[in-house]
Image (tube, rainbow, N blue to C red; front, side, top):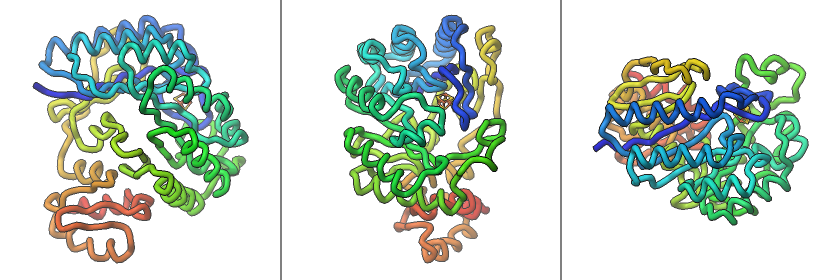
Length: 358
Ligand code: SF4
């Protein structure tokens, strides 16, 4: 029987952050109908496929803008339809939304991993990102999650925030480490077309590429020193606390994405729901997006991981490039595997292209 990861997209947020192009709206008036539509799609898929789920990830958007009972209902539906084999159930939340009641309710339903969008522990940087919660609220959210029984908490950090410095980044990393969380995702800010940051990029004090690269290398070093081992380009965890669900994406394992803008990879095929809440509620079928899992994709996704890829995946031409890349400090090799170094992660697109050559 197939073992899937299930992703549920909650396309609602309290307000829209100025740098974000994830699919979400700053109003929740359609939420009840949306949850019912997610449960309908879960039922339909389960009817047609014989499978169980071992990971569930409820992301967004901001799932914590909904009531704890609504998230609990989604978790129970997945358990009912896809079996009781769920080992990891992650819910994303915003530190300013996650009330004690919300946390207790989702924990009782089976959530065992919480991912909080913090981005920075420095108030001026958080304000620049449009974040409402201050660091005291982040600390209170982590404490409330512990009280509710969460033993696996992840915080997001952003690199290249306007006016961020080496010193302010160290302060954020220290803050996370002192809170004792198990997992940190650290992403370099990307200017996405259509966002406020993109339109105002000339007026914002943004890091240039070199400064962002320095912040990234600093983050890798300081997170490692603080006990968070890097296991993917942007993800760091205490031993055994890696995100099992997200590992499925990079290891090309199967996952089902339900909700507006959610993507799936099942049976070698990719498909997705359009970025449209009304159409999702109305029952629009997912759109086919071709096949996936070929050699190029295995190289592209596998090289994101610290474990790297197996050398037999590479063509003779690509193998010949390895000595120079190793000499430049971009890759590390064993007899059987190739992986990117932190410096290589910064040039991952170029290296992936070079090693994908046939
Ligand atoms: S809370 Fe998250 S998903 Fe929502 S707008 Fe901000 S960054 Fe985007």
